[in-house]
Amino acid sequence: MVRLTADLIWKSPHFFNAIRERELDLRGNKVAVIENLGATEDQFDTIDLSDNEIVKLENLPYLNRLGTLLINNNRITRINPNIGEYLPKLHTLVLTNNRLVNLAEIDPLSSFPKLQFLSLLDNNITKKPNYRLYVIHRLKSLRLLDFKKVKNKERLEAENLFASKEVEEEAKQEPLKTFTPGEMPNALEPAEEQQIPKVVGPSPEELIAIKAAIVNSQTLEEVARLEKALKSGQLPADLKSLVENTRADVVNEKDDKMVSSNPNTSRDEPKTVEEQKNDDVAPMEQVLVCILCGFLAVYFNFICSLTLLFWIRMIWPFLF
Image 1: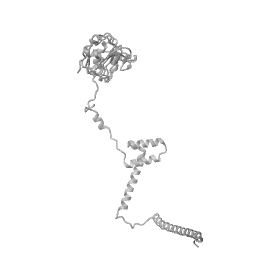
Image 2: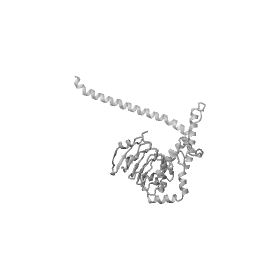
Image 3: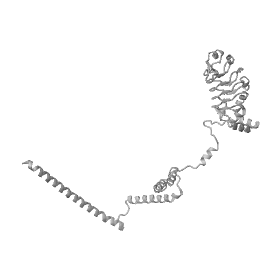
Image 4: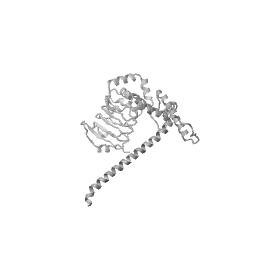
């Protein structure tokens, strides 16, 4: 921990910033307590105390010139109730990324008579219900909150919401809604989860029926409806009969396989007329195939013989 001594203040950078204000840079010194700022002799328009370890915004001397105080990225949890008396001309206060939790902790800011620009981003206080309206209600001169302009509509809404002291006190006491790892958010949620029916995937017969319906569908709407049913696993009512037929076909197919694979099944049963015709047609096809193969063989031999004779006739004069 580093103390904010007068020597540290004198050795810290000081310059004219972008808006031509004289600024003192005290960033990143690991300062935990604000002290000895009287050594500045009220010579600065802006003081930057960002990136330190300050816990309380207090111990400020009377600085009539100071208009901007940058104190983001610290650990501030408390603000001096009378801080506005020591900084009468402060118009910009940046408290981004600190540890302000309750709405009551920002009440001391109402003591600033000319505060117009305020940032409380990345504080848990911003998660409180009606946080923005409460800050607007408490700080009447505010023009910009968390880098957003304060509108007249918000002022009227804040005035109507916090018209009575009871509502204001209730807002301060309302607990912050946070989540602790391992904690059950609501005791009724497990019971509700048990009541939610689990979606059961479609059976193989239902999948076959849905895919067949998609193939046979004629409009894009019907295809989209069937694809949705295929993804969700919920079968449309008009496909139930098709599923029953599919199941019957599957059962019959299984029965046929069992009969064909059973060695005890009788092979001497009389054949039907169609089976006899099929048995008669098969030998005829085999005979026609044999005749065609023989014809092709004779034709191939004939062509080979003519070719051989042609080459013999061409070569014969050169042999003698």
